[in-house]
Image: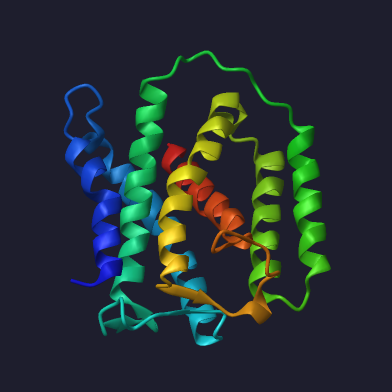
Length: 218
């Protein structure tokens, strides 16, 4: 069994097992998980494929099976199944075990973050991964500002998004330190937390927020 496949199994194993817990009953949310995973996963997979073709990042054949689709290893495609499932399970668990009362956040910091991330993209026009991820994050903040989705204006949701950096960091550290995934240094800023490119934290935010956003759509 490939190492990347084992990581995927590790990501989803406990959330899947606990989905049938009698209080949470997360299994009843499967349709919403599927819809969110599909809507978000398709563009991210296409982006992933294009960047792989352009050598922005690559996958170590030593740790993945030689089964490819859109130039991506099977394990990378499974990542877009195991991660949303686990993240949305954690999200529902977080909501279930926290109080309903929560301070509302103000709107103007969201607009400031949109401007800052857009400016950061313009500052690195020759770094393909950097400019793309900052533009995506900026677009997300602009969408929040104008669409004003109700769920995001609860302060505790931002605490949850911050919390997700912990499991993300562990998984991403394994992927980038071995490495299973390697980055082209010409396409990133070059700032890393341990082995993790700084851009990956913005990627994590954009991916996880998008999953929650479409999961919350009724």
